Length: 159
Image 1 (cartoon, helix red, strand yellow):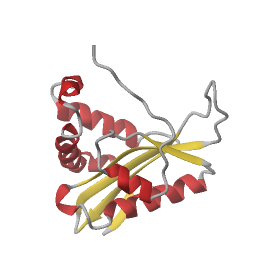
Image 2 (tube, rainbow, N blue to C red):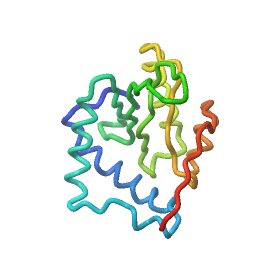
Image 3 (cartoon, rainbow, N blue to C red):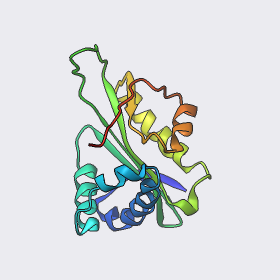
Image 4 (cartoon, helix red, strand yellow):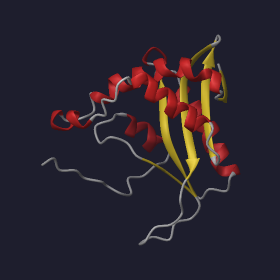
């Protein structure tokens, strides 16, 4: 398996990975919040546009995991804004997306993608890294294993 920078030519191969993640992520939502899912049609078109935008962003890194010529996972992170009205925030990175095909989970692929992105954040002189994760997503355990702490809890109420 190799980890490399994503290319625009990878977009079609990234869509199945995203869709695999999307199916799982709906399961993390409480039923009353499932109606909040963005149902833009056609979804694949919007996902491809988002991938194109993310791959081309400055101050960002989009990596893919490739095995035997097939993409099996990806990670995307970027340098975030430092301004906050209440906290002095050092230069920081944001882990935005991490997905691995369900058939390839549990093989350390997420960890390898993370190590590459972490090295990039360090090279960019980031002092903190943040991420957001659904409160029911089991990936929280991986993030805690990687040294992330719960710092800010965002709550929601459906009216």
